[in-house]
Length: 132
Length: 214
Ligand SMILES: Nc1nc2c(ncn2[C@@H]2O[C@H](COP(=O)(O)OP(=O)(O)OP(=O)(O)O)[C@@H](O)[C@H]2O)c(=O)[nH]1
Ligand SMILES: [Mg+2]
Ligand SMILES: [Zn+2]
Image 1 (cartoon, each protein chain N blue to C red):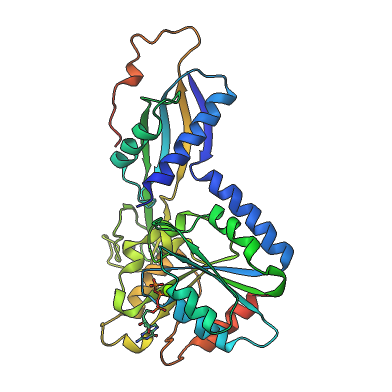
Image 2: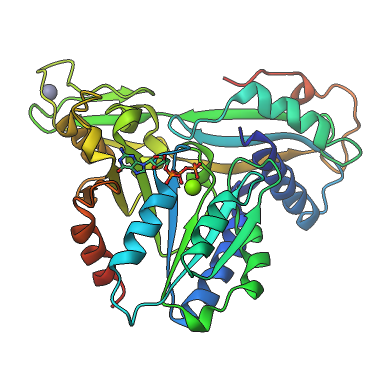
C-alpha cells in the first residue's frame, strides 16, 4: 500500500497552496482520482487525520471526485464505463477489440480555506462528507 | 473560499524524477525502470539481457529491495556495477531514493542502466524515477489476466516483457487474451514473449532495447 506517501503528497500540495494564498486554515481538499488509480478513500482520510495534526490542515475533509474510465468498442462503437477488473468483451456486441481511456487522474483540484472575515462557527464544510 | 490548485498529488516526486532524468541524459545513459510482481524474473531478465549486449554497451544496475542484498550480490557476481537501495519496507522505489544512490554510481562509465524496482504490480507505476523506459515484466505463472486486474501498471508501460514462456502451457496462459488486455490499455506497446530459462525471445528484446539507445 502506498497511501502514506500519497497522503503526504496531498498534505504538502495543500499546505503549499494555502501558504501561497495566505490562508489561515484549510477546511477541505478537493481531489480528483481516476477509477484506475487504485486509491482507497477511507484509508487516505485516516492517514491524513494523523499527518495533518498541528498543521493548518488539521481536521480538513478530503473530498474525492472519482473520474470514470471508459471503454470503447472497436467493433460496434459502444462506449461504456469500466471498473477494475476490466472486462474483456463488449456487453453489446461481444466484440473484444476494446480501448480504455481516462480514469488515471490523480491530482488536487482545489482547497477550501477559511475566509479572512469568517469565524470558525457554522462551518458546514467541516462536517464529514464521506468520500465517494 | 475555494482556491484552485490543480496539481498532481505526487508532484514533489515527479520534480525529483525530472532532475534525475537530467542527470541521466547528461551522462548519456538510457535508463530502464523494471517493474513486476515478486519473482516474475526482473533479476533474471537483467542478467539475460546483459549477456547479449554488444561489448561497447556498458551496463549498470540499481537494485531496489525491501531489505536483502541477494539480487545485488547476484548482479555484482557477474561483474556488473551495482548499487543497492534498501527501501526499508517501502513497497516501491521513489525518485529521491534514486537521487541519493546516484553519487555511488559511475554514470559516465555506463550506457544502459537497469533499475530493478521492488516486486509490486501496483505502487511502483505511480512513482516516476526519471527513467527513459518503464518496462513491465509479467510471467506465465501469474496468469494471463494481469492487465485486466492491474491496468495502471500496464497502461503506463513503454514495453512489456512476458517471461517464463517455457511455462505458458503449464499455466494455460492465453497469450492472445493477455495481449488484448494490453492493447486495450496501451495500443501498440511492444510485447516481448521471452524465457530467461531457455533464452527464447531474448534476442528480439535486446534488439529493441538497443534500438532505443540511439
Ligand atoms: N521456468 C522459468 N523460470 C524462470 C524464468 N525466469 C526466471 N525464472 C525463475 O523465477 C525465479 C525468480 O526469478 P528472479 O529473476 O529472481 O525474479 P525477480 O522478479 O527478480 O524476483 P524478486 O526480485 O524477488 O521480486 C527464479 O527461481 C528464476 O530461476 C524463466 O524464463 N522460466
Ligand atoms: Mg530480483
Ligand atoms: Zn461492441
